[in-house]
Image 1 (spheres, one colour):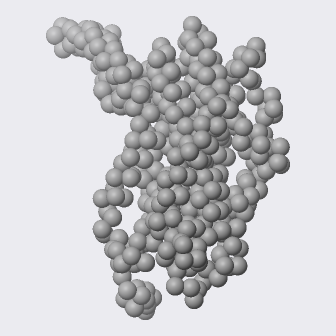
Image 2 (spheres, rainbow, N blue to C red; image 1 turned 135 degrees about the vertical axis):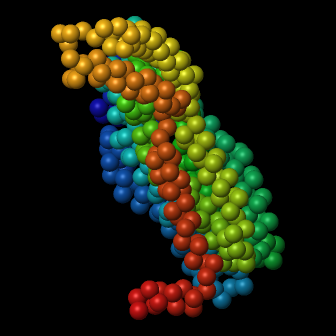
Image 3 (cartoon, one colour; image 1 turned 135 degrees about the horizontal axis):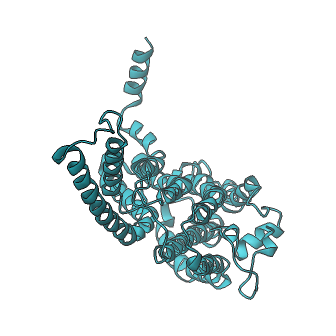
Length: 403
């Protein structure tokens, strides 16, 4: 479907699951499409990444080079030594852009599964369509992106400007004049680079809100769930795939933390072990932010589990009573041998069904999905463990491994 044919609020065409996308819409998306930086399917991602780097990082490089703050011998911290900003604009921003393509390709098929698996009952189909329409309209909201820009400049820039002016004396973004303040590179950082970075983050958090809102509406439907489904989540375990779709965002947050910690370690004399609680807290908060919405299904799955245990418990009571009376308490049927009797297999199948119901999880979240998400967050931070060992020891151990 073309980006220009995404149903608008006034259209009479019904929404379909093919219209659902957390990222394919909104003013910025329409702008990058017109600039030929994206196609309707979020392709040409390399162009968007290159454009973002050219806007956020490249001008800082050029301006610092012209001002003599690139390498030194200025007494201020040179630009190339500021690991945090390089990671932010050369790693985090590209990951935020790449995540759009991955989320679009993986989340939309998950939404399709509600219909493909027959989870939407016929009488609930209209409410399902309305939920898709609401999510798509939120995604296309002009007001939302205008508010993000207002937040970035009315709040973010004022706070950022005050902060970086205060730090400008010893940093590459400070002015060389005695009066202090920001250099041209510093002004570009505060008014262009950082606001664009902050806008991209805010827009992603808004998309997570849209995803959580959609899942909440799904949890309010009378879904056709089965307590004995082998996925042990009533048939909703496919939703754990959303965590896989969000892995680039986990890596982006990990890289952002790694850049900040690297500056503190290399230029502030800190040790990585000082930040273990910060890293752990951030990992837990990210899990709550990205995996938390899946817990919305807990009340629904709890009802499905209770009903399944009750129904299979009653069926099991009836079946086992008749089995006992037939094979144990009374005379065994002469014309039906015990060996090879289907009654034994049926009893085992009933027991398996009850066990599957008892093992139903209260949220469609799997441990492998959670571990993969945490690993994606920690991966950019792991190289900093090398700072806990001197280069001589590191080389010595590597040589020892080889020889």
